[in-house]
Image (cartoon, rainbow, N blue to C red):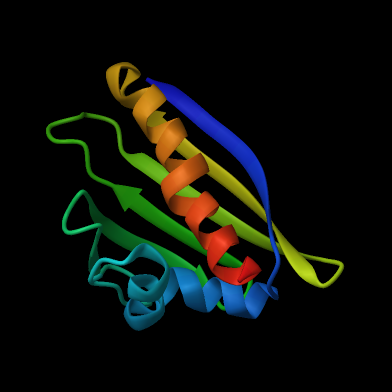
Length: 126
């Protein structure tokens, strides 16, 4: 099991980034795929047509998201924590994704960099 930690700069306010990560309509705008998402702790979510699924754990509007991502029958929970920090006119996103199965690590690191925060950065840069 491996952990992935990285910072991303997004050219939008923390409130806008939070909305982009939690509102299913906004998620669909930047991913191009329908999303199932709620800010209700304990609710299930699904992104990229079910490629990413899990359970929402905690939210702090404009500041923090905590989710459990599912990896089959893995014994340890894979937890994603996203912290949003105002930085100039944009947002510094602090990501920590714990307990990624070794065989999935490279795919998830690339996914975070390109499909997730790369796509979100492009969405706000337009």
